[in-house]
Image (cartoon, rainbow, N blue to C red; front, side, top):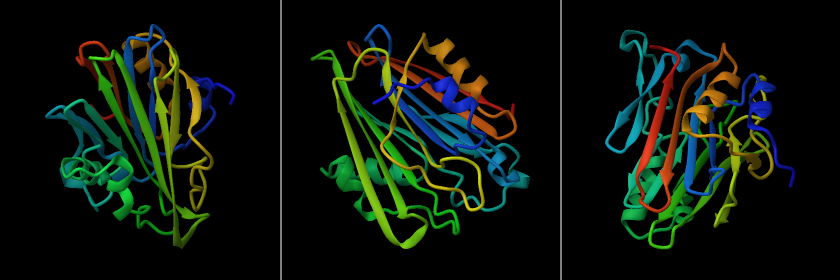
Length: 239
């Protein structure tokens, strides 16, 4: 599979929607995670990321302008032991609770489907990263739950697992192929992409290449594979 430039993928797509990037740093020492949100409506754009426990939550930037919170207010990132969950919706909690009860990442999502936002039927994209300091390694998985080419009568489920990721490589999945009405769901397996630079340069690259009009917030985390300690960056367009 071709390894792609994240800068190019983002700069050439005005509306990928919400996106997850997971991979390994160039030096092989860090597990890299990123999540961004975009918005076309005033309700979607009226959001910020805030730190919550070891993860983050979305909040209304201006609570007085909040309309329907059902699909825009949630915890995109939660941590359970050595596992970090990153998703584009409240299925973060579904996965967290499932893991607590002994279910796997994939099993936890069996009770969920794409979002009920006709006519888009936005896919639910999710990821989990497991860091094992004792073995000095990590692995991750990415899931997408999507309608059958826009037909809500059927849900297609795909899970992709990546064990012992390669240095400087990662995978990128996003909700929409591009802008449109209705918005076309992501197709195929997660894109293999380059992971370059330290946390600040990587964060800056992502933020600078997201469409200026539509970008809303960005979360980036680098976790040390040997210690489990992490650094986090949050960027909000609304300040």
